[in-house]
Length: 153
Image (cartoon, rainbow, N blue to C red):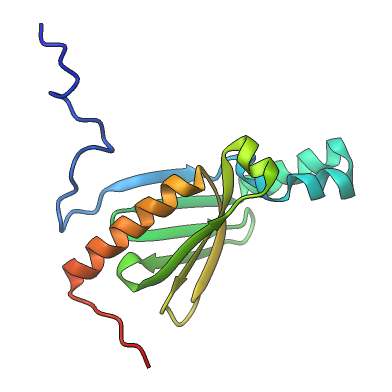
């Protein structure tokens, strides 16, 4: 039996076909991402029990889908708002992490694009450095695939 780990690449090691959209992350944004961003303030202002409950309720209303070609973030439990940004339109991507966020491996990613409806999108995310780098790589790949270039004024 062949047990060589190099024979079966992990999903992060395999190459994505240029025209095929591959889902990288899809699901609810976990509670720890909300606690990592605003956890201290929730607990300080609302008390331990209410702070956790408030963060948990906020996390229920956020859903994210990151693919090799776009980012879709949906907010809201009763009424929903969805932002869909094609990655070839992204201009800048960065993240911030509080001390609590570093402990919980969570932070907030900011994606700036030339989209007219939502030019700047901020959202909590687990492991923000990892996903920020993925967004950067896929953005460069999508710009090359779509043959787009920046026009600076």
